[in-house]
Amino acid sequence: MIQQILREYLTLEGVTTAALIGRDGFCIALATHDGVDPDALGALAAQVMTLFARGSAALDGGRLQRLLLEFRGGAAIITPVTDEEFLVILTRTTESVGRLNYLIAVSAPRVAAAM
Image (cartoon, rainbow, N blue to C red; front, side, top):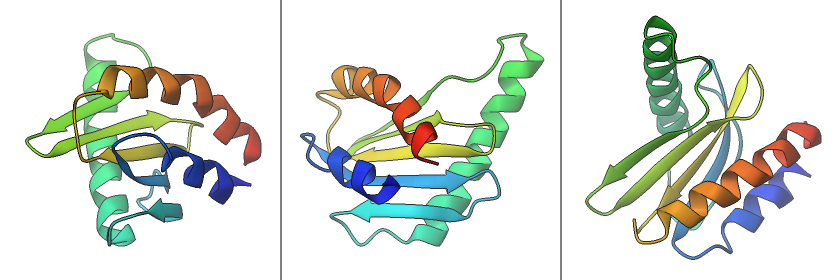
């Protein structure tokens, strides 16, 4: 079921990769149009989430809800789905990031329920 949900993200314009990553950096599930290295993606995403979650806590910002990283050639959106796993979406564009951000927020509970 999780794999099916991840493949649905790939139908959204600009999305190249959707992954479910554990806090330990392990890639639980991956759907991609690109040759993304799941180990590298997992390690990077886990480190970034840990860093920003600690920063949010230190600033009394509460639980981190979503992290958006924009690059020259796209974006990465990282969203916690449980206390131990998070969803990573990679895009090749930043044009529809706002819409995509909303769709991820709405669908993240579906990923959590599938686990």
